[in-house]
Amino acid sequence: MSIRNTVEADLDTIRTLIEQQPTVNTVTLERFDEYLEIGHYRHDWSWVVEEDGAIQAVAIWWGGIDDTYPYSIDGLYYAGAGDPVPVWTELIKHGMQSRPSDAEPPEYHFFLDGDWESDATVVAALEPRQKAGTAAGWTAVTDRLRYEWLAESGLPPRSTRLRFERADDEAFVDMFMRVSAGSLDAATARDIARLGAEAAAREEVELYQTMLVGDRDWWRFGYDTEGKLIGFAIPSKNNGGPVVGYLGVLPEHRGNGYIDDLLAEITHLLAETGAEQIRADTDFGNVPMAKAFERGGYRNFAVRRVLSFPEA
Image (cartoon, rainbow, N blue to C red; front, top):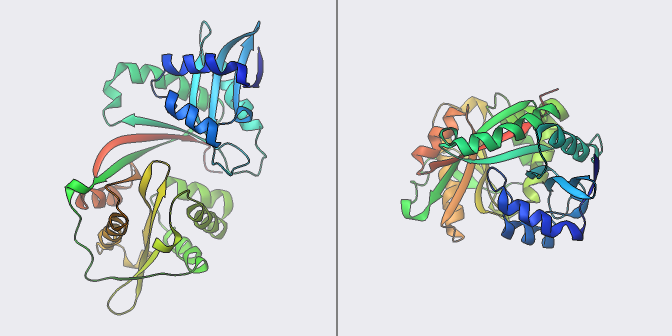
């Protein structure tokens, strides 16, 4: 078994596999061609297993257009006979080893329908891919509920008890640090364990600064009528469109429903830019955030399963 990067001559075979094996793979033919052209997919970010000159398996990794290294897998494909898990495991490990040890740890994301567990085809496609990811070291599994707001649902009431103002980057770094205390978000906990609270906060600010089509001018701090800082709201956009980037309430003000005020402000700000659809994720265990989405007119339409390295 030999592993190598993909080349132009492989594209017809890869496109055939994409068409034949769509289940739980994020890649579609349209997405593959578009992302290969703009740089989210690259030959030096994708690998094949080859035996006797024939492709047996393929791993397609995704990364940001300006990234040096890929971040996550968008598709695993198998054209061989027998168990694909050992082959996929080696492909995943090979991709991991292409990244420097101090780079942000990669992940594997699956985008699933809300009722995926009752679909035997999806379960059968997911199981070997998850086994391969686990064997390669992604032993932490986080299910994130995916929510969607549609303009036809109407806007939630805008806050009458908070006023919103802009703030500079250092102020947002401080806020990320403060709201991370007691956070129910698994990714936040992993980042803090990996980097420490301040470095994790700076990484978050940098991430939202570099979101492809998000506007830094949208970021807001929320203050109550007495001028006390309550929390912050970051509306944003990614390749899929407008998203609830991040929102957080300071620990001393939690339990007072301010999460609804912050979410409503994000929704209104994005709607004012013409957004007719807004999407958001929250961890399955983050019940307060899930309930806030439902109160704000967002519906749960899907699940994102994230495979990652365990906390250090």
